[in-house]
Length: 629
Image (cartoon, rainbow, N blue to C red; front, side, top):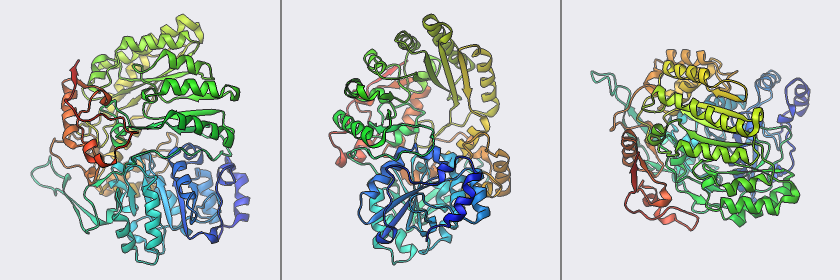
């Protein structure tokens, strides 16, 4: 049954942006609830403004609604004012399309793109009237399935989620829905066994995780001793799902009712990356690289413009300027859609793959600034992280951009990287100021350089998964240095809060015991932890104290080479030995070339050798080409 619409209409005028909660957007899909046998609600555990910019959710929405006997609707976490109003009016969390309570669906698919929304998941489940823990739910409740980058360490959320999709989700979600339909009349145990049989699906209930008890060997206390599957259906490790070929991108994108964070259409031009930056989790977990054909992207752009009215297209990938046909693609987009006044946006570009041709092509459209990500200020640190872009090349590119009319450049950096010294931090300031000087020579006071400096968080499945998080004291000292060195008209510095960094590091590297902390923190009021004005760090510290766990154990502890990690219950296809070799190469400042220049035998091709198609751009394994800096 629908929620009480009269109650909803009474509370909407009293909350901010009521358009977030009414649905009815152009291109949303509303099917006859009573005529459909299987009903799925796709949930994004943050506000509508952010969730509507998530392309992954749109891909799943399209894939499911193309099935004639499946209904897929959406929900987002309401903002704090709407949460309070809904609780007072006793309105459960509902879907936007048919205004149905989430508890009425067969399956709820939750997107987990980053760790700081874990408490938001509990808020959504509670607001929906659904028990928080998988063990508390039975066949009367919807199945709770989660996917996204944060699920590559699923353990901190394992007790709350029935099943995780590890890796590419567009085929897996269809198989899960089919399994749900076939096991509808069975017990929850049997339903979960059916999901565990599917490739790339992790069902936490069927795995035991044991840790070292307190002993004289304090270095190993609390670390993993064993991970075991408890039923025949459970794979160990669960190898991530990889689609061999990317399906055509969704084009009937939902047009939002309010302004959202990225108010534009988006097309994923390729998935994966060959650069091998050692800090980058995404670069590992989405291997191998697969590219969409240029003509398919052009056709999708034409259809999107016709179906949505958007006048800006974001070309998305981890490194869009490395896309094989990027110059041709952008040139043809500008030429073909010149009458549409199309604007093209690209995420952060690599200075070493930037081309004048690309700049000139985009300049013919409407583009207000360029974003580059040197990541480190010194050549030495860029060798450590395997991002060997000479400083002079960054300056040359900045000069090219400013001289072609752009007045704004944004630079992304990190501090707290392994082996970083204060001289490396000073190099960030020197590079930023030099780029600003270059801009002022061309545009005078109109030149603007925006410098964003994030704190490095060592993530699972990367070469730096063994290293500790830099201490809050050292990070504050480095931020203070940057504040002194980067200042003045036309240059702006932005950096993140060390408390937020600590929380991200703990959640990213946690084990299953951390679920107790997540739930206790939520009970103490933690939610919207990614929002600086909403984060309650004190609630998290009280939660750690009450559960007897130490955040330092997860964040500030250096791991031994042979330690078994909680996240090894899943596999990215990249071998742990390769990651450790990469960590050791980083300490020698030895770099690996781009994978397209020669395979480094990370393990991904061996894992998925039967799935390879023409879209894959990885070469066959050969001798490992290396160079030293």
